[in-house]
Amino acid sequence: MRLRNVTGSKDMIAQSQYVIHEPQEHKGKWSEVFGNDRPIHIEIGMGKGKFIMGMAQAHPDINYIGIEKYSTVLLRAIQKMEENELPNVVFIRMDAEDICEAVSYTHLRAHETRHDL
Image (cartoon, rainbow, N blue to C red; front, side, top):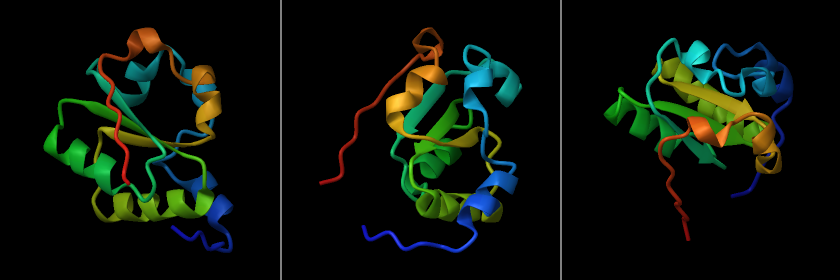
């Protein structure tokens, strides 16, 4: 996937209601973000959000956190969310190396490894 710079993408992400801007403040308290205590699934490197949003729509009883490093790509996911709001999805713009700062593994109830080749 070729990444093209989108002028103002970081500002648009900063203003988005779908992005958690200080995820470390929610570590261990994600039920407060979602307003429920449902299981949480995480997609690391979610790209434009097609997979995570499809899963969230198919499984409204599960909360989803999408993590994406690249602002330009995350912006595309935000735009999809604006077209089809899903209350059980939030996004985080961060490098996956920093995931331990935001997520307590004791609060995760499932994991999935998926590789697109």
